[in-house]
Structure formats: C-alpha cells, structure tokens
Image 1 (cartoon, helix red, strand yellow):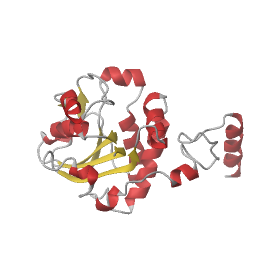
Image 2 (tube, one colour):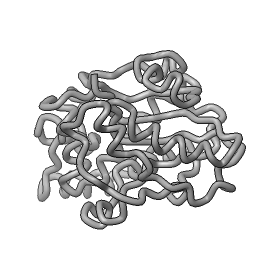
Image 3 (cartoon, helix red, strand yellow):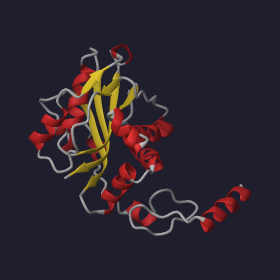
Length: 232
C-alpha cells in the first residue's frame, strides 16, 4: 500500500492532475474534482423524491417514468458546465466514469437503484462517436455500474442520425431535432425489464423522451431516468 501511495505521489509530481471545475491541483486521493469543488457542487437532491421532482415532471403525460434524478444543476458558464464540457469535448472519458461512480455512491442509500435490471446509455450517432472516440453517456453508465453492479447494454437502441447540436435550441426545436432518430435494435433484451436510461444532461427532456419511446416498443418496459446534469 505504501508503494502504491509513493508511486501515485511521483506521478502527480511529474504530471499534475487538475480539478476540472476550478483548475486546482488534485491530491493523490482526489479524482476529477477537488474536495472543495465536490463539496460545493449544486446537488439537486432529486434522488430523495425520485418520482416527483422538477426533472420527473418534464416527462409526466409524455412517457411513463417511475424515477428520475440528476446529480447536479447545470448552468452554462459555471463550474459544472466545465465538468460536462471537458467530458464531451476534451477527450476525457475518465471524467464520466468517475462522476458516474460518485453519483451512484451518493444515490445508493436512497433506494434509487433498487429493482433496476439494466442500464441503457443514450446512444450517439456513429459519426459523432467516431469523432469523439467514446459516448459520454456510456462512460457515466460504466461508472454507475462499477458502484452498483448493474449491467450496461449499449446495443439496445441505436441513433440513426445526428442533425445538429441542440445547445442553442428552444424546447420545440429540440423535440423536432430528435424525432425519429432512434431505432430499437434488440427488443428481447429489454422486454419486461426495468430500464435505467442514462444521459449526460437533461434540458427539455426531448432526447430522453425520443429514446424512451423506442425502448417502450419492446413491451412491458418499466422506465427510470438518470443524468449527470439538469439544466435549470
């Protein structure tokens, strides 16, 4: 154990790791975000009332959702936006894995994951994934899986196209942008099961809704939703 600690300290000396939120140098025991930034993350607390919160209400009357939660509130230009931006655009898949693991550890005691049979990350279009090299939602799901043991299946649904980024779109434009872009590929793997659909950030819920509607075609599917960030 002492050798491992010394090796980590040497690595940090040679190649310092920085907090993705504030840029401060991380200690050997810190991962991705430093302790002060972790402490001050604007946590939503949605997991404590997962059936009725601001995120869950986005989907009421649209798709049947049993639970919905996000780890923190997302706001453009904030430290939390830096976490998501580095995850998506700066080739740091490890951010997703670590944040997924952290989120899962905090949610575990609330019963949020009870009865979940399978996690399905919202897929990227093939071209988009080739450009990025990974799917950030898959990275989050992998981190959650490491903490909970719940299996991840990335091949249930595929995204058939990517039209354009939704960052600057209004709610109606987002809905139109994702209509018909998902295709259910393996209905047998989700039929009759409780699925946790995982995405990086929820703004209007349009992307999760479109993907969830494909999953529901398998029949007997129960749905819960999880995201790292939730836009106010």
